[in-house]
Length: 287
Length: 240
Image 1 (cartoon, each protein chain N blue to C red):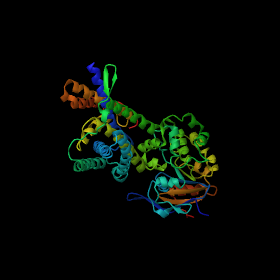
Image 2: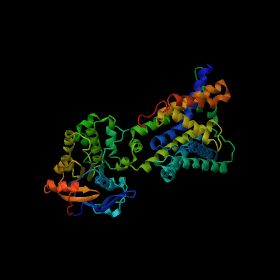
Image 3: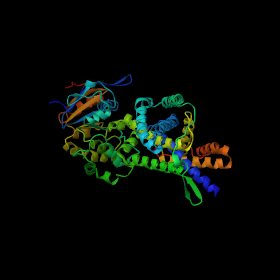
Image 4: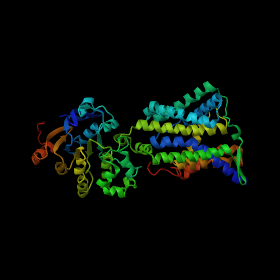
């Protein structure tokens, strides 16, 4: 029974990792941009939620509804004003700029909020649980997993069933020809980063209500996001969900054997996938 | 009368390399012209400059008298000039129908060209609408590229080397669509190495060599020797 419980908790944790990773996967899939500040942007969004929850006294779910458009605007502007200038044949400028951005965000948060770790209170929902036969799952972890599935379904519908999604894929294929079709790649990239920041806000909601966070918590979240994306296969959103779940289950199993092995077990699972399938489990056909 | 498209002393560069040396062409409303020339003559560079892919002087390209030389590709499309690029350049992640619909991304699907009318023009595309565009034969891919450009309902269609790499029978099928495109009111610029094909559909012909126009005249009035000389550079002709 304990084994099943461990697996279930791992799957739910994987949902959180998939949320960390979905925005990263979206941005990489469309513009081949590896955003090293992605984890810090999740933490930034968590602090924004914290400010809204404590300042306005609203529930975290409502705060997320307020924060999402703000983060969309921030992501859109960040891409349009800064990151678009780094895109080109050379892969180094975006890495350097987002690495610098990561440092700027961390230090700004340290200045503004100190190094104390924080947590967003979700009230009674924090301790609420639902029983599924012999297994009991927490309400917030379950919501986190369901949100991850909803985000992946939503992003897939957007990308494969809408005009803007067609433009995303066309721009990803060939920016010059996309321009000839009236698509403005700079705006498409800004839109993609804006949407990624909405996903980041959802990830921040579950990060902040599930665990403590502090201004330097971003890089570790980035590593989990990276591992989920790479296990799943670059550019594949369902692969990202699968990658998150594999990572979560591996960490959960590792922790069950020895609590010190939780993080290590996740990294070992990542390395094992990388050895067996270097392009990930579900790589995009065109890459 | 103001020309639909006019270039005046158009120069174009790839870095320090000059590819066009003062090119003057004009296209009237409803007219079909051909630009012929050997490989490296500057035909594709001319198309890239007109369509906004390659930067040029603002006043070197005019659309209905308005300078468009400094406009980016999406703005050139918005002014009514659509391009069928060399090599087709279809989007591999998109199906045939999605490739066609991308053509209508920024310009509204108008009364002239709709998905339905493009399928009527090239019926085979309707059967293959759900296939990945790059799974089609070369000729069918060219039809998608033309249909995609038509869906922006252009006033001027630039066709860059549409017969390149295709079997003659396939080229004939594609050119069979041109009377219908012309009947829609669009002007057409055809860039070709296939001189015979170009002369058949165009009312006027420009010949290019080494980034310059070496011959210009009505298709019906040019003789084989004139074209041969302009194409291969045996003799330079006066421009008008």
